[in-house]
Image 1: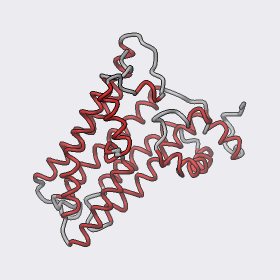
Image 2: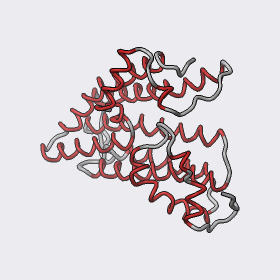
Image 3: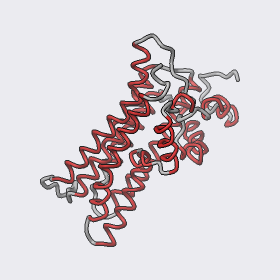
Image 4: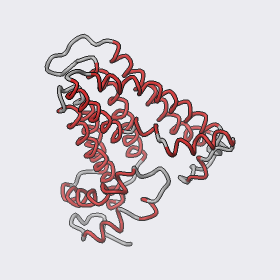
Length: 268
């Protein structure tokens, strides 16, 4: 559909047709379930409101980064305040994550910097969440900072594993680019393992998607559930158990992801 990228007040139907094309939304692994379920229905209105401000797509991405990181750092706030703020912030982050691309498609302004900043935002947010959970489990709060201990160390270990797991995905594109191979198509077939045992394990984890425990939206929902346990128990036992469980889950996720990449066609 032809449109005027300088138009700051497009009709909603026209904006949706340009900013939310079906071929983009339907890409494999491109859309978080929350995006398809409800965020995209809201983000188009946010995008329409952002256009008259003349904010750039990268400006929206910077806003997304700030909301995500600050939301994650709210987790050590006492009681349920921290987890609730974090949950709301991650909903806002995924909304802005949708809107930055929608603004870019409407404005016809695409750049490697935008993709780079988007990756940085998710790296920072999803590594900050387990670190902040470790601080919370240690009883550290912003209003009364204390010496951190073993729980924060465990949170940092999970954060490193989260970063490694995300790097395993992006390094596929680095390896292909350095060897002159074309960009990998975002389809399910490329991620399928050619080793029968690995393929069966991957299918099993499709029913128990433990990797989602380290995605911002799901991680903060788990933090909220743990926070409710904390309040009921009158201690930090819920958050502490969540940090404990996250360590082996992060190891399994990272190792499984690495083996999945090496046994698939992504590096052919």
